[in-house]
Image 1 (cartoon, rainbow, N blue to C red):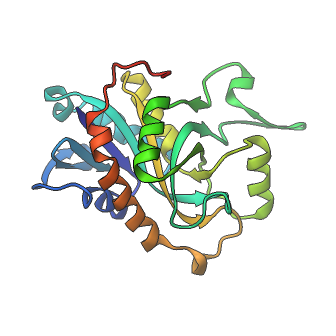
Image 2 (image 1 turned 45 degrees about the horizontal axis):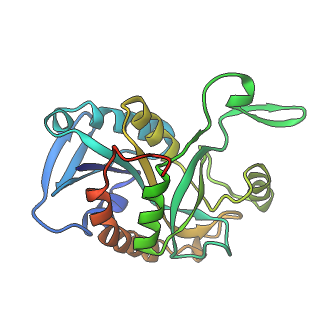
Image 3 (image 1 turned 180 degrees about the vertical axis):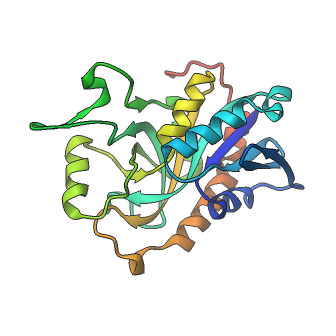
Length: 237
């Protein structure tokens, strides 16, 4: 089965591709480039849900996909975590990909887009696949929030946790990748390596190098699961 992995930036893409053996082939797409190794195509699609959705949609509709369709799309990269549940350098596999700031502000607080009567604000990756990848990598499983603005205060971090109890991390691309994958009827997964804590921005405390190394290690361990996973099995299993 072919797997499309979408990251935000090239350094994340390169961390993922380092996990795979074999020669690398590069395939040009509109505004981007697929890095192909074996069954895996890895794409740096840009930061934020809109760029991620557009890049994923182009890849899924490309000639590269037409000749060998993708059976799985993975949103991957580093992210901020709601520590201490998920410490720096740890791994997270999303059991829910949640649009945390898609909706409306009201006098009574934030309303998700679903409460407004349209759209959706959550995608659920195949539970069996989440369990298998978490077991293979030692990752924690839980909701990952997609935000368009990175959290920079304790107050905002607290508000996100209050609205989404049990959330493990935030990032900027997962929901966009999931939206594009769903429209192509392809299952989606999200994998994050923790580089920083959600809350006040303290760049000196970030561990980006450690998170990228953890991302490489995660895909090295998860590759057989991802490549061998049967997308036609019971998605609720």
